[in-house]
Every structure is written in structure tokens, then in C-alpha cells.
Image 1 (spheres, rainbow, N blue to C red):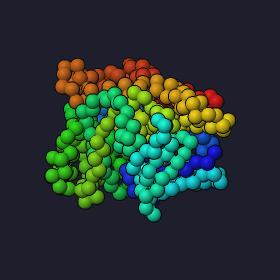
Image 2 (image 1 turned 180 degrees about the horizontal axis):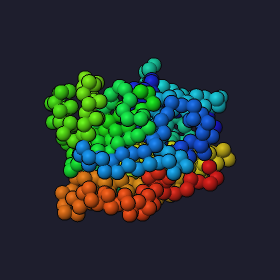
Image 3 (image 1 turned 120 degrees about the horizontal axis):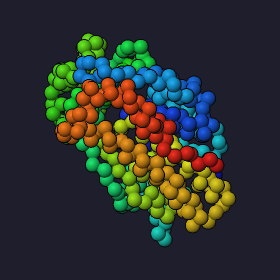
Image 4 (image 1 turned 90 degrees about the vertical axis):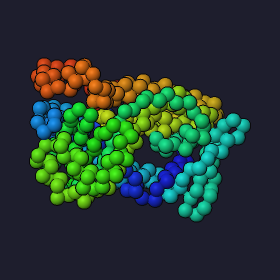
Length: 376
């Protein structure tokens, strides 16, 4: 099949993208035949997560027993690798610097898109369109698709500082009432820091400036981390806001077009699921659409194949999105129950007596909630 990929950016490094591959996402890449190529990319496998309540360490969760550990892989080199592998096929074409503006429809069916390119406006026509244009999807907007929204109470402020902290394979979760910091090393030689804040409060933090923003963080952080960050205040002065959205389309497709990944179901950042779920969507999409289109099926059968993608993928998306809501509900709901669940005694009890139950409950976050299509 002739495949044309439209990419808005001219450089994959131009946008902030998630970079934590879970075992479920690594399995998808291996299913695509890219396992060895991924191993050659810069990466850091996370060996353990330390959990702090305020400045006190209360637990450490090792990942040594996992067959595959969560792995930090910067997306720019991974995306370059994937497109380079695709370019080995003579019928693949990548159009960088191409921004989709509208859909082309004929007789009630999507037959292409109108886009702005580096050379001016252009139309791209196709037998079928797969929309992977993310949480602000233009295709979704032009279709006017109905959405089921899941209210989110938090946003994430991201920043990074140069240098290594701890042993470079350990991540940290630092939480206290109303705040959570996610800290992990990048193989590119810096420390990623995500500060989970109540939704709508970013403007207040930004107005504080670099020094004020750092000062606002420090009451919640362990002393050794503060000492590491203090010389790097200037590097932290320009954080990036992730406006957290979590929803899913009631219908992932229309005649001639299928939406997958965040275009169909923006994921909460909880559990670092976005890229992993999107790649699993892509594997199943390739299986169903690939078979239909390689058989020169008529348009109706191609649409039926696209519908099968949604049927197969929706259960996992729903399950993961439900799990993603548990932590924020505890953090941002000030009830006796939530205070008890976030207390140090309960965390100690859970670590020592409930670890098996918790691991099974959270297994879908690591390994996925459903099997990938065995025929993919």
C-alpha cells in the first residue's frame, strides 16, 4: 500500500512528548519488529521507585522482578528510528512541516485532507485516513465527534535540570496533601521533574518567576533533592504546562477515517500510559486495516475493519482510564478516607501486607489490560 505520513513539525524535537515506555509499549514495538532497533536507542531502565511523604522516605518499590522494566526512551530519536524503518519501504512517504486544516469529504465519506505545507496549501487524497493528531486533534474537531469527558482536577508542570541525581536508575515520587512530584533520570543527562498541581493554578506559579517558583517547590521536597536543584534554578525557570485532559470519543470512526491514540482517547498522565496505549492502538490498526486494504476490499469492508479496531481496543482504554482516576481522587479530595489512605501508617501497611494485591490491581498499567491482536 502507498502510505503518506503527515507530520506538523519539521523536527521531532520541537514538542514535549512523553518518554516512559512501559512493558506494554515495549511489547508493541517488538510486535512491530522493532525490538532490536529500540535496544540501540538511548535509554534508562528504571530499577526502583522511592516513595516519599514530604521529606521522609516511606517505601521503595523495586522492579528487578519484572521481565521488562519501565524504560525512559526520549521520543525524538525513537520517532526518527521508526520513520527511518518505514522509509525502507519504497511506497512510504513522510511529509514534514505539514499541518492538516480540514477534511475533504465526498458523498458522505472522508477522502482526504487539506493542509498547509512548507510550499503552501495542498490537498492529500487517500482511500482511508488514520488520524493520530493527538489530544488537540483537528480531525476530531472537523468531524464534530461526540465525546465522553472525565473531569480532571490536576495539571502537570514539567521541567528538567542538567546532571544526575541518585544512581541514575531510580525514580522518586514525593507526595504530601495536594502535591505530588515525579522525578526520574533521562538518558540524555538530565533529571525530569513533574509537579502535579491543582488544575488552574499554573498562572499563579508562573507569576512568581524562576526564584519564586523554586521557593514554592522546596517545602515539599527531600533535603538532598533541594541541594541538587538549587544550583540549577535558572534551568527550571521556564516550565512547560501539561493541561491534563482525559476523555474518549463515543465513536472512533466515520466513513473513510479512523482516530486512534490521543486523537480518540486522550489519556491522563497518571502511569505514563499515553504513548504505550497509542502504540498498541497502532499495532491493532495495522492488523485489521492492513488485511482489508491488501485484499483490495471495497470501502464498506475497510470501514468494517476500522470498526473492529475500536471494538478490540476500547476495553483496554476504558480500563486504564478508570485506573488513572484513583490516585488523583485520593490526592485532591480532602476526606477522612483520602487522608487515611495517604497516611504514612497505611502506606507502610500496604507495602508490607498488600503488595501482592496492589501489584495485581495495577498490572494493566505495566502490561496492558488486554492481549494484542494475535494475528497482528
